[in-house]
Image (tube, rainbow, N blue to C red):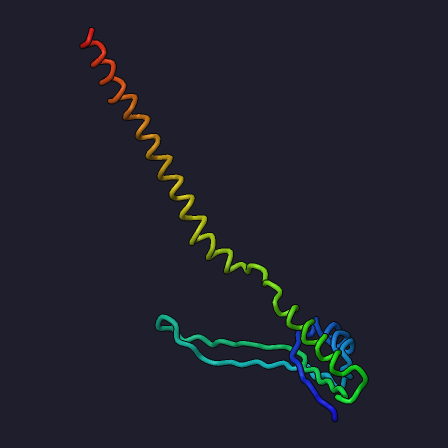
Amino acid sequence: MTETKSMKVSTEQEQECIDSMRDFGWEFKSSQEINVKDSHLESRGGSLYNVTTSENYVKLVFSRDTNMPHYAELKQLENTYYSTLAAQPSPISGKTAAVLFVLLIFPCVLYIMSKTKQRKEWEKNMAEVALPAREKARSLLG
């Protein structure tokens, strides 16, 4: 019996995917580049905009004989490989970094700035009010 599998990959990943699948006993059958463009109208703030989205990928088709030698072991190794690959943490995107900055770093900077301002006000009060009061109290005691 033969099993087949089709995959969508970026054009840059096409050869890497073919090589990887071959390592697990898959035979490359076909490749088809897909270029899809969609255009539609959207209303934003009372204005009408033409929005165009595009998608470009390669559809790869593979087949594998389920009666081939070591089929069960190859299938297990393939599952292990791809589940480990899928668990790779994604890098922080620019948007995520911006959100983290706004939610974490920016408030910390504001907090530090406010504490610095409070500290300066306290030091001024100490110099102008508290220390003179202490000096006056000392002079009253003699």
